[in-house]
Image (cartoon, rainbow, N blue to C red; front, side):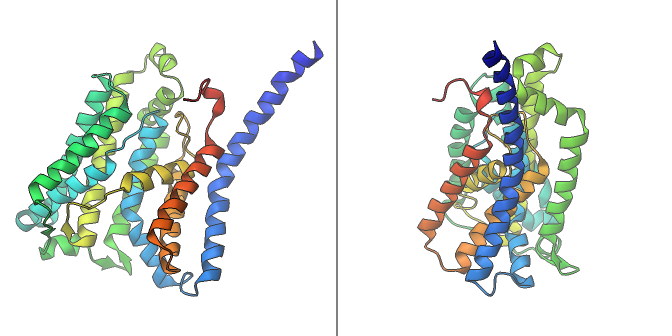
Length: 325
């Protein structure tokens, strides 16, 4: 009897340790990366490089904020890179006639991509992995079909003035990403929708029995993700002053890595926006630092993959998974 009584105590202690690991891992990793790259390069800890890191991380930040909702909901979106590319193409194609208002078609294209993903997942009952794996190819195919491999340049001064210039020494893209961060944080932490997303990710059957419109929440998550990816596509197009067929290729790996490294487990139900911000900074600094010290690009992919596996190993809630397949 004594052994039986002690078992729950041990389990609860282990459960209490997991959040500690999840919280400390991104902070410790970020600090370690800063120290390592500062020792390896004199140019790393400079104001100029700091601004470069901020500007390079804007697209990743906006897309990772979108992915946070999807992963907390217990799903996955592999099409974010293709959605960003298609939205960037819409912005570039419309910039000549619409100027700064090209944000409208960019966001609408992202919205439509998210709506299709969400409808197929929530109402078509197709797993999100399969749906977004298919739309990853479809959206990228649309970009290739339209561009035929040639870049669509952006030269409109109004567009570039709003999205590619600076104010108070900060790029406008950084200010727009920070504004998106503030809005998303409010939605995630202080709205009914944010609570419903966490509830569905934590236990879909319980959420359904509690009266939460599960399918509507699932649809809303992917619509929000697509809309934010539309904004990310606009920022990417402004940064490169063009939309290309290869734009944002592989972005989904960095986005998923940023969210997971930030402490949001793939099992769903748990997540923090500030953790995602930390994850974005880790991925951005990791990429920036490896480029600064002249590391082989192929080796960089290996290291990013290793960091992602380590993050999943340390943050996954194994109590929610009975069988690993």
